[in-house]
Image (tube, rainbow, N blue to C red; front, side, top):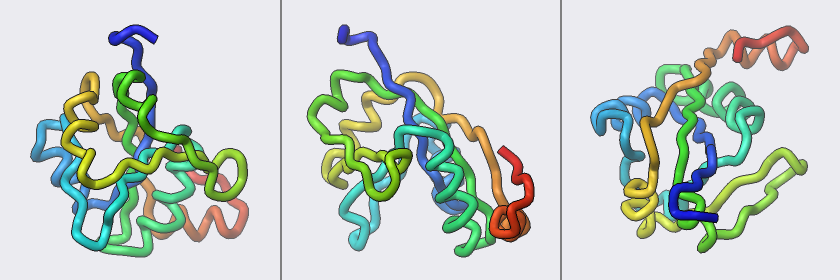
Length: 132
């Protein structure tokens, strides 16, 4: 892949993390907390939506978001994709100490592509249609 090639990734976040992303001008993810040694971007929107809806809505203000962003493909060559459940549960494990370099390789803005609330989590649990 050439240095201009990018890969689209997704990251589920809560309101606090989204506020920090916004503070960066939608250009970077915030540093990890000491108890968070790994940054986990995921490879598909469906998986990110599951996490945002089923987990992020249980914490903080009860809202979860899905962000989408592009990163230089050459950077990702250094990291293995991991499947952590079903085949759609694919993510990269980026060590916290590599997050600054990762952020420098984001191309374009980090976009919010979905928002979920506790009501969406309950609807999904009941098999109803959820927003995306």
